[in-house]
Image 1: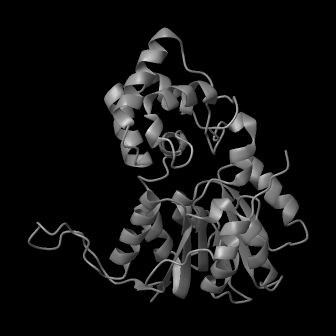
Image 2: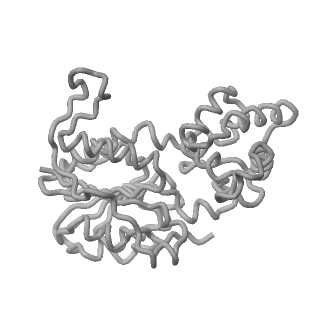
Image 3: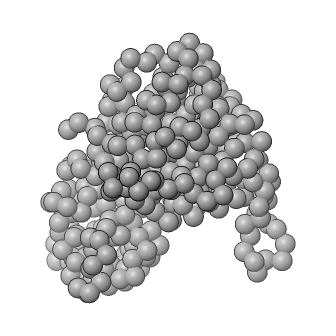
Length: 310
């Protein structure tokens, strides 16, 4: 299947990176290289460098094909959570800009054997990195009911998480849950009809399981901080999020990096160790234009936040 992914907030991200032709830039979520292609176009072929990171080997293959005319690109099979180690391995201390597009790609949603989509009958997988062990099938069939309910509520913001988790456990006691449509049926039967008007009833639960399988939230604040620390002075970090849980984590990390204390109000003194690393360029997140939202429905929830290193 062809790797198709329409880059969201493309122009806004490119402007936000403030690209220098002789700079070093990192696309930490390379995907099909939609954003990266616009970055590398603006780089000098001899003095500029693009580093593309992705944990999906199929994405890396597609990116290499899409960027085949450019010689100043390094392709890294890895996770942006390990950006410091990746740069160390390349003997690079600091870079001029980093882009993180945290959304799941259109290809991953559409490719049947990946199991990301709640449409159709597909294997319960949801791994971005096919070499990792944890799958959606493992989560659904082996997590304890309370654990399952908590992650569906926390990562999916699903108010019917308890009954969904209960019904999953009842169903799997009779037969192992193998496919996406089996899970969808359980979710649909768990949510009252009057509450199924706001999009597909399985959307929030599938989001939660995907986040758990790929460990998308727990390291995110540290990833943002580490990325900022890898920037040169005046270097910029652009982060695109697609749901409120990601956005809160990014906002918190950037506020802390600009020196704002993020300790709970009930603590009488600061214990978060906030120190000023730079400034947030976007007082409010940038959202797609109405035109882009109409052209690409998956852009509707996107938000772009930009940070500049001191």
